[in-house]
Amino acid sequence: MISSMTAFARSTRSGALGEFTWELRSVNHRYLELSLRLPDALRSLEPRVRELAAREVHRGKLDLGLRYVAASEVQALNVNETALAALLAAANQVRSHLGAHAASLNPLDLLRWPGVVQSTDTGNQEALETEALHTLTTAFGELKAARRREGERLAELIEERAAGVLTLAETIGTRMPAIRDAWRDKLRERIAALGVPVEPARLEQELVLAAQKGDIAEELDRLAIHVKEIRASLTQGGAVGRRLDFLMQELGREANTVGSKAMDMDVTQAAIGLKVLIEQMREQVQNIE
Image (tube, rainbow, N blue to C red; front, side, top):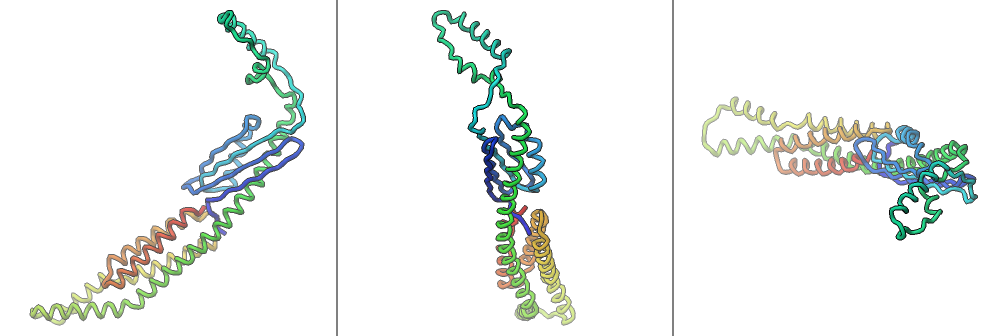
């Protein structure tokens, strides 16, 4: 089963430690690119989160964000005496310069200064990280399921257009003998209208050479081979986006050659139809992991 690179997932878990909410968004990208937002209390998780993301997702631009709300119970606090003393000394120094204009300092403002207040419950850090990772694993499960559902829809669209490519190629192949005969007759008529004597053997040789230049049998065969490879990749599943992108390039190359060798307007129109279908497939393939 193939996966799209475009999806969204959210997972929330509440417990004794608080509430953890992960939001994951992914869009198409040539490689795996991670953007991570963590609360200060859980920034130490970043290496493990990146490692988990690399295992779960192979391609795509992935944004991960964690929102953590601590449990409602009031935690015991420990004042960092050293940091507080340094801050008070600095405040007194500033007040001495301000003189009578110095505004009174609010102790709560001092307590909000980074590093002044520390939680005594440092043993809970490992439990917090474990809970956050469990929630993230659930979120990744939802994200991958969404990517697979979207991948199924993309596979259906690609299969429809691949079938259209085969139909056009078969139509061109079926009509090529009649097109070549009509082209040869028309060329003979033009030569006859010129009134210039031409040896029959030489004329036939030139007609054969011209017909060979306009022969597209090999291109039609390769179109069928590439479509077969596309279907095999869709069936195989996994991270096949780059392989499918390569096959789109090969299909486009064959369609361009068919158009350049077209011997009549019908083949030209069919070649345009091939290019339209291939371009539609290419757009879908850009979203496949």
